[in-house]
Length: 206
Image 1 (cartoon, rainbow, N blue to C red):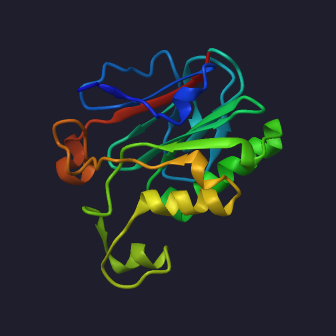
Image 2 (image 1 turned 180 degrees about the horizontal axis):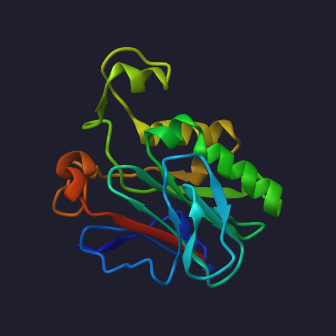
């Protein structure tokens, strides 16, 4: 059992280092660019190799040696890489960020800031709470054009947004685990409450 998970999709690029942390991973953010996460759709650009860049929920960079990172405990970490412009991004997507279409906002920022095209972007959606365990009330359901108490599939919602924005389906990788189900490997806010730890996920241009 490995403590840091990798994406087979992103692993094909030798110029990238990346990982999705687990409960037992020894990853720390002190040597990474990080965020004060606020459950928004705000992306920021990281130019320095470590420290908090500001308030937001996604970090982008094209600078080698800058590991952009996010923390999650049921929300989804999403790592993006543009193979043409060599831009990477780390995204924190909970229900609020997903409802605000954070992945689409990030793609637009990548295009505006660095000239990225969605067709060149590869996206790996990391471990988060699965549709098997994520029941939400009517107020949250309405944000996704659903009604009543429903089981929400946040991973699929983010995938659909990526596809609608122009990222090819074969360039989007979905998670195969649920953070709520797998207590041995993952922290889960819904399962553990305020005492839950956080997984760290990162991506870096070598």
